[in-house]
Length: 55
Image (cartoon, rainbow, N blue to C red; front, side, top):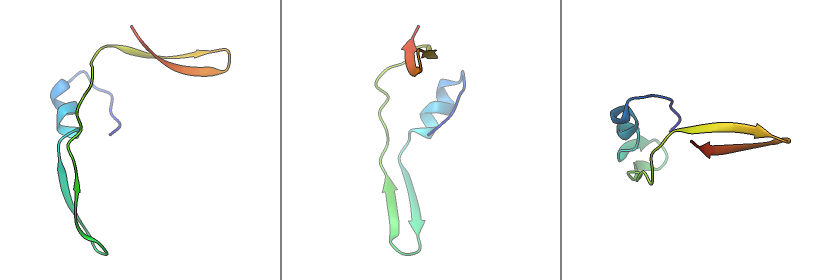
């Protein structure tokens, strides 16, 4: 899931279990994800590297 939002409910919806159909393999299940933390993050570029920093 890729999203940017201030709405925690929108993020939660994107992390739920999903069931879908594939022609060649039939029914598939994407298990629910579990968030491991929350906070405010910033992408920081420094000396040719890109890092995710928690503020």
